[in-house]
Image 1 (spheres, one colour):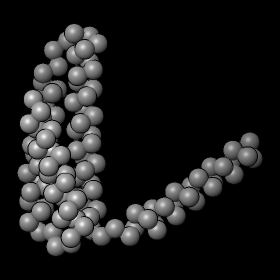
Image 2: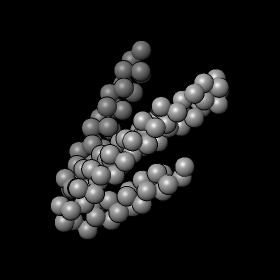
Image 3: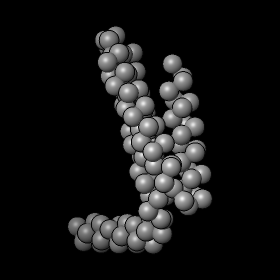
Image 4: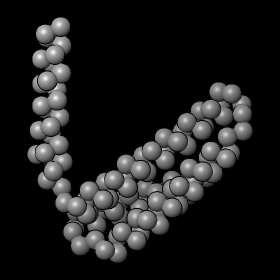
Amino acid sequence: MKKILVLIIIAAAGYFAYQNFIVGKQSEETGQVRALAGDFAAIKQQLAQAERSAGATGMDTTSEANSAMGAAEALLKTLQELQGGLGEEEALQEAEELEAEIRAFLNRE
């Protein structure tokens, strides 16, 4: 039991250090772009889940797929609005890469 407690404490300390020293170094602009990238990953997961459900059960999951596509379009619009205010080169590059990825996702139909 003590070993598990020590392991949990070490893991928590490692997570805390990672958050403060690695993640904390990114700028606010880069953080905003990465947050949108996280949202996009969730959208892709939602669509993949809808496709799996349709394949496994044969049920119509068109509304779930359409919902994911609509969310991706809204995210693209939000990203484009954010890009207008970005001044940091790293954030701009990440935003452009994310925009290209979202456009490819929307055009894959």
